[in-house]
Image: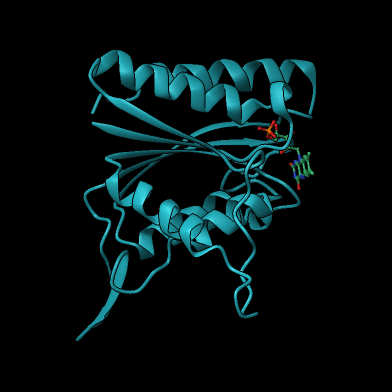
Length: 190
Ligand SMILES: Cc1cc2nc3c(=O)[nH]c(=O)nc-3n(C[C@H](O)[C@H](O)[C@H](O)COP(=O)(O)O)c2cc1C
């Protein structure tokens, strides 16, 4: 089993999603001891933003990002909520993945995703509360975006490990973290 672990938080050792992706990768590895983990830190080594300027895009870096995804069985993504969306570093990585003929194609009945066999686990952390049905839910352009994006690429097994309300109070934060680590303990092995 190949695991691709992606971090994108700018908060280094203070990051919640970094703790969660590490725990998820450890949980998957414990269940499948031969599993290989490929790690990318998008905050430390960001991909370039898209531009049409000639020669400005690092084709090798974009191609490596795509190849790592194509080689992965499980993709673990640390996705903080920053300003109601994902960090721009994570967006740049996603931009490298939407490649016609590789991750999706247009067939007779419209777009077809090509990543269907992969499992995606999103480690989501947010300061407020955006769960469906709550007053701020319509401002969630993070989990919803990732679900839509990977759904378009054909992924039908996307799981969310969520720690939210981290800035609400110490009590809510502690409960959110305990809940997230419990979700990780309950993840299916493969
Ligand atoms: C630049 C920045 C923007 C943020 N924007 C939001 C936001 O729009 N809504 C929210 O609920 N929390 C927001 N937060 C709080 C983060 O979601 C929270 O700190 C979370 O733990 C981030 O994940 P991380 O610790 O892995 O970086 C923001 C934090 C930062 C650093």
